[in-house]
Image 1 (cartoon, one colour):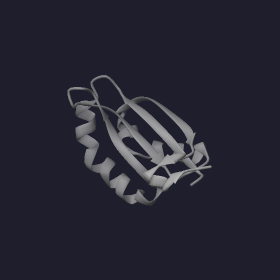
Image 2 (cartoon, one colour):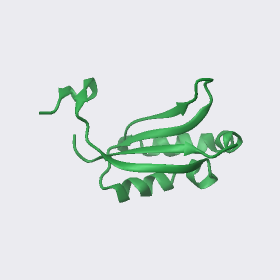
Image 3 (cartoon, helix red, strand yellow):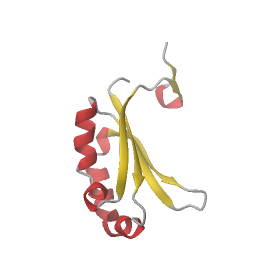
Image 4 (cartoon, one colour):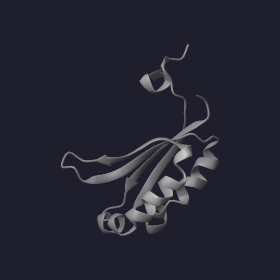
Length: 101
């Protein structure tokens, strides 16, 4: 399973209203691109409030993953204030059927 990228995106302060406004469009974007997403999830604080998002994309290189990320309606609405994109190599776990050697 080579050719993945991990994206960690942190919400801008006070972006909860923006998140709600474009959530449907964000979920449509996810659905349209579901074949490129290995797994994605919201990052929550201890109180259950969304504070960011994480994606493991079945895309490499990083530049291609960034194009998909920037096309997300959350990005365009300014929900995320900072983000990181890194190459990701699955190394162990049920998802990959054990571990790589």
